[in-house]
Image (cartoon, rainbow, N blue to C red):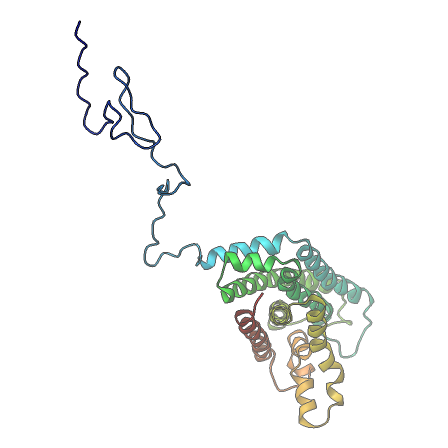
Length: 315
């Protein structure tokens, strides 16, 4: 009986006699399924194609290395509001402002030349600025202490944008909390003080005192943020800021000549007193609002120095 002849092999398959079979594989014999092609390379193997090819960024659309400034703002807002020191420092600042208004309102004596109620009610701002300055330093120095600054700058390589976002978020929080605290302090003090203890302020006095004090707290915090960025050490930066705030007002009068006069008139504490009490009751040629422009220049200079050092040195 004759042996049946096997059918011809389909094109592209291994020959029945084994010739042309891939290395390491045995050619199929007659009656078996023809040799199947090997599986395509899997993900992670040489020659494999990515499951989701990365599309190049379109022109004008920032990639992961250049996020929108709004994303940086949101990140800084999340960080600053979730840190316990922020909440406690703001509560202490508000308690000082409102508490001092209650103390002064309950203990002030009659005076032949009384100050306005807004001036006496906002005395606590002079002490509360220490809390604002400390929080400004901690906003940046705490990240250096914990090492989080490395993660921040890895996620957002534009260092100046990161510092600008911190400044915007911090200034907004400080201004709002400061304005609310000063308003409550004024309402409390005005209700407690009799007419022979303090005279009624004008509308311009109220606006200048409340808004100006809130602006000052934001600016002194930004000034401290710049110092903290330059020094990168919490204790050293806080000590430096407090020295720059308090020492010129305490010892400026001991410096002879025009230098001592300039130190006494243009230091941060004197600029704050002008906002609270008015230009007529405080020495110096600057009016209250131009004095705040000078305070803004102090804060801008500190932030500029911090930005330059932040870009030029390692973390």
